Length: 267
Image (cartoon, rainbow, N blue to C red; front, side, top):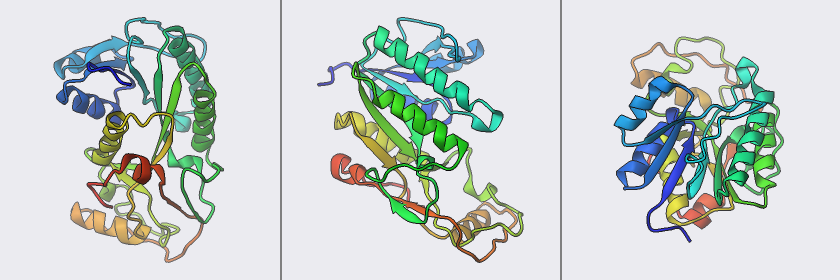
């Protein structure tokens, strides 16, 4: 059972983490937010977030015991595989787990991605065995397994689909590009508002210990969706190849059955 006065520590106050932190503060929840930049501490403090500089790398981590004094530790740091940091991300998760155990954290939530499934021409849900094909998907699945294997705390995994929302205008993703492959593939996206809504629902329902796929239940074709998005943003229309190659449709059992969550922004 969660205490009346909840404290949530968010490791990684980036695009999603910061907005989620602000939404928790608005509900009267005590939020401790981490940053690797001392300069960002002022921004966090101004938003009512208790700021901490926490640096985690493959070999060590700055151990601020007070940051880990929380009811829920929310891990929202990206793997950054495109910059070659995939392996170090797994080691970072190992260090974070060590600190969570050391400080007796009881609930750990890890933000992951629907990329752990890969595109294998099928519909997937939380019962489907992950089979990642990208480096990012493989790294995130390793991180999930590490967190899930711990007996000292309850682990909850949220697999977000492609992220859209403020600062991530889907109209810009392909604007002006030509001969874009796989135009008939279904899209798997989620708006920031629903990322936050599902996160709150997990806390409100105390629905810990699950893996949740978080993706809009609407899956238009790639060409149709991104053409409409570019038009809505007044950008140059992209051109797609009318073909269906590898694809997946991300669905969820537990967002419906456990959370009873209704999406606010359909794709």
